[in-house]
Image 1: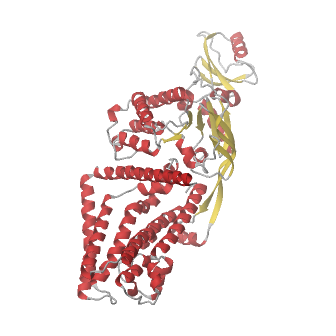
Image 2 (image 1 turned 135 degrees about the horizontal axis):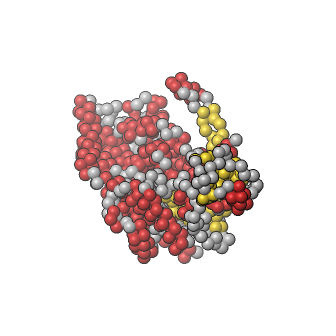
Image 3 (image 1 turned 180 degrees about the vertical axis):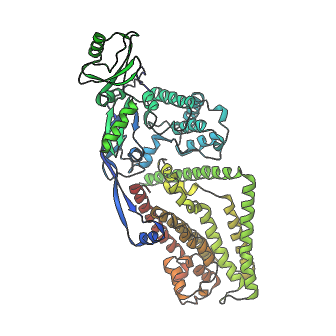
Length: 346
Length: 282
């Protein structure tokens, strides 16, 4: 999948007022060591051995009001733990975390009133009740004024097309419908920040697109700050002007999607189609590039940003061979990120 | 100054009525959810009710064979049974959701609870409200009425006061045990049976006169898990009996004090458990 040509959503990097500020955040868990088997279970009773796991290991970033930010990283990288500390579910081992200038775990309820959360794999809706009843209950829980509730519900019904299943018990909804319901539920109380944990997981292409469109609209219309974790690069490409990459509890990258290519995707590939009569026998010989693949008249030449530019290389190739066509392949972001994970592992 | 106090009182009343209304909404949602499965719901209610009747019938049959149980008549045992039943059933009604607190933590539901602007214990209490628990309350009322029929207790203001305080205290003691059982789950999610011994088992133990049990068990239910204050000591007062174990009269009035201590312990323990959860995540 190539990202060339995909327009990044331009989100106003708003007034420098940070909604979320995190500084040298750390979270260490003690994981008990368990012996296996029947005898092991007995040993576990008497012997308490444990090791430390640094789930979040010194992360610093801040998020401004109105940003849409993607949080990427392999499973167990520390994304969820970070979000749990931002929402006040977990107390950090050390470091500073502030949301709206409040320390989340100390002022849990106050922060909770001003944020919304959607977990892709879990619903916060009442399983056995019609969808609309969950909305009613959340209205009581968050003390949403009647007029505000009516206006919000009306807007979300249209944006998310909820009407066909508004009165259906949640357990009978499809995954996509349930996710739409969960999104509306998380936004009824006008949260300033919306956390989404893998919001498009398991959805089909159409459903994914609908969710992404909705998030963009909400961000634009209401200025809701959106923080999402995902494994789906398309989510990031289409939604997030800014990207955090986390692995092993560390922040590997904080910046734009394009920036990641400049910084880590150093190698590009020039693909040339040789003209019909030009049938070079061996690999093409061009300075600062090497042929990595050949398929008849089509050749792939890899080159590095630090050694030459695309135009210099094209000129060099064209001076030696007659060409019919050429394209430049940017490295896939996914491949770059994979490399990033792997290099961090060493 | 007076205006301040009035204002604070008004705000407290507002907050309290708000909490009660919200409790009603959340519990109502649970009730409606259960009604969705109509047959299952009806069978559970019928089953719970039948179970409770059989439960008491067993006691009645034993007492008809052995008219006195450690010196207690059928009516007197019914009084113990009814008092414990009333306190326990109301506590169960409010707090038995906490019985599933282990599943709650394992399934990650508790994380969601912490992301809402409400007290965590309050939410945990409303998560699994069961209508059929009213069956036990009905049984408590019925057995208490039988006891009154058999004993014809001469009610005075003092006796009514002791009864009411004993019922409220008993509620507090059982409720605290439910909370402590949930707190246990913050450390290990495998201790459910141990808690059941003290909740459901506790109600069973308290349904019989304390002097039926061996000394260490009596001391256990007086000083460690003070279930004897749910019904046994106040019942002695209501019946005008001296304590066969020789404790002074004022111990028969201690239920509210004991319940307050239990509640304080449960509250502190819950706070400790919460701190542990928020620092370990499991």
